[in-house]
Image (cartoon, rainbow, N blue to C red; front, side, top):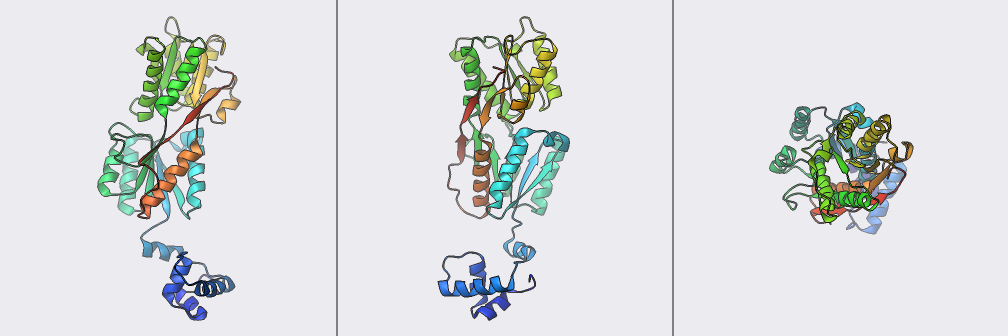
Length: 337
């Protein structure tokens, strides 16, 4: 009976309309007897709150926004974002929030989407991903006082709320493992060069080489887009060197799998002649041949902490967490390394 109004519930329960409102919002300060009477009427008559009216009164849509710099086709095939989106939806739903996902093929269209979201306020807050050194999104949202949380890293680190993997430490772990297994010409295929995650994992790779006394060779570092085709091109470039690399670290599992497939096409045996490690420990790792060793990142924890922090900011509460939260990673060994 969605047409029933709170004033009618108040009359039937013998309480004020303000009391009805407090009960429906879960306010703990309501007298227990009054709460029981209100809930009895609500249950008997099947009252359903008008979500649109509530939104107008509270100035909230209960929508969280996520804009991903990918085509819809690329996003559908990206195991990291598939898992991240599912985890955000799960955590948001526990607080009666929903997730609105937009895709942007270009940086220009991405900026246009953010401007439209700021203008219309059709979402209450944003989860940002794939930060850059000078990130215009962060500067713009900060200047507007619009709630957002970054999954990634931004400097200065205490300027905004963020949740991230220990990308430097994780890349160090992958590189050190390859060195301990006898590899010496280790290549790194990063994502787009401007992304913070690309630079952080490159730094971890360099740190491990230095700690183990292996000179850094810039010819062993190449960059790719987030696709198997782009990764194959990067791998072809690496294999043109003499001598070629004996191991490759890919920024994510898609890049590592694409590079590994290209190495096999060139007749190389894996892992005997060349080893591969990816990032994210996605289901893809188990389905490629040979199975892919990968750095496992805790996507549910990343999503959960980011979502909880964002909802606190939206609701005007101080998040119960430090401004920068780090989620540890671990190495999952399989056949490729």
